[in-house]
Structures are given as structure tokens and as C-alpha cells.
Image 1 (cartoon, rainbow, N blue to C red):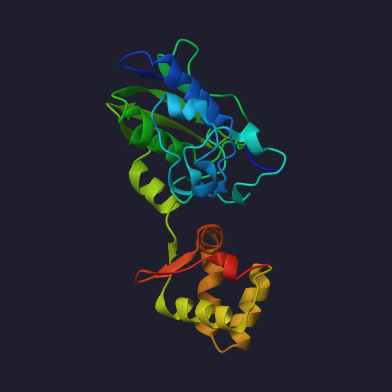
Image 2: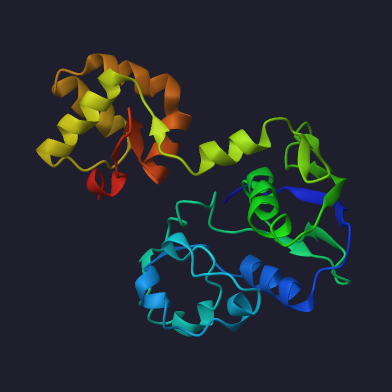
Length: 244
């Protein structure tokens, strides 16, 4: 299952990546981006990361030595949730063979590709002193699902709003006051979310019919919130407290 998008083209850098930087980006793309315990990672060898001078990062976001604990996974806090600063579990943008650009790795089911490109620009390419330009065309499994990613001087021109897309992808989902109150009531009663039908039924049972009506046309926001948590005026509900 899942959905595959293919990409044609290359983004070009103003100069070649250092070998250490190219190696790190390759390791980054091959590592499942899982929420980890940074305290455990502090003493773990991570040569590709240290070679480019990066810290472990928030929730282990820059860690790439996955082979170290691929069996025991002692540092993993949540296998199915990325560090809070990253938009997904896999980044499939990699350096070109000559280190002079960025391209698709060829891996199927690459999601959040615009957000990931923005992340690479913000966290690696720009801080390392590189400028990215170029265009890459994409084609989804549906014939009408086509488009282009256009980058000029580290700015993603198309699609528009890439920085906002990344910001949304790594932030808790904001919900109206009445939905927030409903979720807080469920949290207080110890209710665990199993599927959307159950939460709607429970909302009605608890007297939060307005929240139930909000959920039905906002499935995308609801499921995004299940991954990243919900927030209202700065207070955050971590969904690990609300589901099995």
C-alpha cells in the first residue's frame, strides 16, 4: 500500500559538496527518522555526523548511525514518529554522484518531498554555504497528479508556500476551543483513540456534539494531529496520551 511519486531532474549547487557532507546526506536519507533519546545518543559513535560538525539535535534529529542499535533500538522513543523538527520518517533527496547537486534517490513512497527539500536547505545546504537552483518535475500514480518543484537561490518558488508547508508539518495542529475542550475531557477520562468513528461517538456521548461535527469534515487535520499532537493557545496535548 501507499502512493509513489517519481521525480525527473536535478537541483544544482553553486559548488560541489565536500565528501564528508555528501556522505552525511546519504546516511541521512538511509536512516529512518525516528524520535530518539538524545541523552543516550551523546555517547554513541556517529562518525558521519561528527565529521560535518552537527550535534545530536533535538530528539536525535541529526543522528545517522542507525546500524548501532538496529537490533535493540535502545535510543528509540517512538518508532513511528519523527523528531519534532522533521516532516516525516524518510527523506529521499540525496546528493548527485559528483556532489554537485541534489536529486531523488529513486525510492518509492516518498512523502512530504517539498517539506523535506525545504528542511535540507534550511538545516544543511544554506548553513554550509551552498546555493541551490533548478527544477524537478514530478508525476504521481494518478495521471493528473503532476507538477514541478522550482528552486531559485535557495528559495522554493514552486509550489508556493514551502516554508509554511514545513512549519505546518512539524507543528501540533491547532484546533478550535470546543474541539480542544472535547479532547481534554477525553484525556481526563482516560479514553484511548482507536479510529475516527469511535472518537466521534465518544464526543457525542460526552456532550461534545459540536466537536464531533468538526471532526467529520476535517479528517486531514485530525489525522495530522494524531501524528503531531493538538494545540490551543500554546497548550499542547500529546496524542500518546489519547490513543492505544
